[in-house]
Image (tube, rainbow, N blue to C red; front, side, top):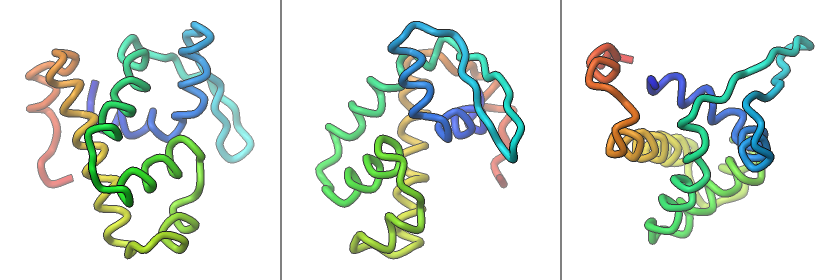
Length: 124
């Protein structure tokens, strides 16, 4: 699993969560009026647990609120950083840190290979 792949799947967190709970292996996503099926890899089964684990370990209530409202409630980025006492850059920094921590949990479980890590560009 690559970091970009994880980021792409996180855009559909709600649908993935429901599909995993219902033991389905794919979801339908639509963009610009086109629908396509997205297969759910084995690693998506651990996604909910990892998200909750990260939120539980973080003492900063603003960080928790940002991630909960974005991932779980599905609010837009603009709505969240305009409602919460956080700057736009701070908001995106929290999201980036969250994605890094999530990816690191997958690495610690051995779900990311050494080759996948080395293939990723540092400058992106």
